[in-house]
Length: 119
Image (cartoon, rainbow, N blue to C red):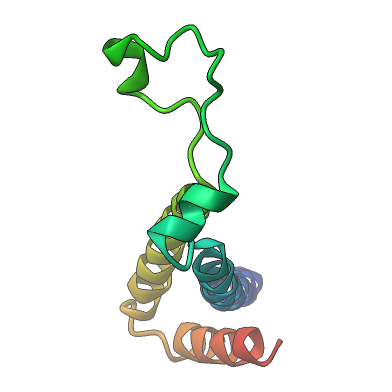
């Protein structure tokens, strides 16, 4: 039974470290997404290539309604959303474990969170 408790504490510790790693990864991704945003609409129009004049779908409004490629910041936002979902799931898993009111599990979550932030 002691081996099971040690394993449980280690799993919670690793989940807490992973939670902090995802949180930091989300912050790095936010910084990259902000750098990918255009400074102004006129600058975006100058730096992004126009859809070619020889594009056969240019006259078709139904085909122009859905852009073929999304801007770079959109993909950063999609990645941030996925990171957020992972962070929320990990946070609720750690919270559920802590709510077992076991002091060792609680200490595992605290030590894991501390180690994750330190790394």
